[in-house]
Length: 149
Image (cartoon, rainbow, N blue to C red; front, side, top):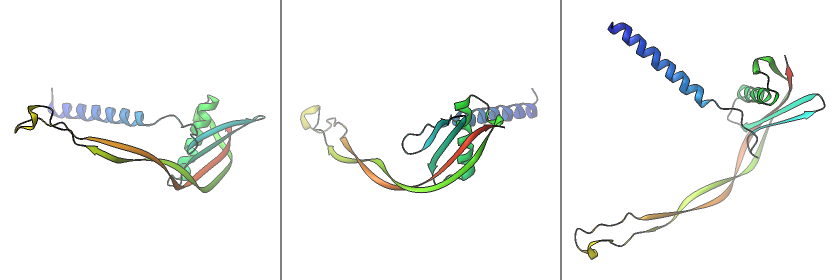
C-alpha cells in the first residue's frame, strides 16, 4: 500500500474515532436535581421549560440546553422547535456540598516474622469522614415557552 495513502487513512480513522468520542460526551439534558438542570411543565396548551445552571455558563449554552430539554419532553427534534417568551435571571443561593477529609490513620503491626528484620508490614489504613458544608453559589436561569417553529 502507498505510504501516503496509509497515512491519510490513519488520519481519517483517528478523526472519526475522535468525533465519536466527542459525541459520546454529549448527554441528554439533565433533570433538575435541586441545584441545576431543567424542569418542564404544561399550562393549558403552553409548554414551559426552565433550565438552571451555574453562572459561569453562557446564556447561549443555557438556552441550547433548554431547547434540548424541550425536544426531549415533546419528542420533536430541536431543529423544529424554538424558545419563545424568553426570560433570563441570575441569583445566588446557599448549596449543601459534601466534603470528605481524612480523620485518622492506623499503622498496622507486623503481620509476619514477629517484628524481626525483614518482616512484612501492612499498608496503613486511612479513614475519611464526610461533612456537609454550605457554599454560596451564583446561578443563571432561563425560562421559556417551547413552540414548534
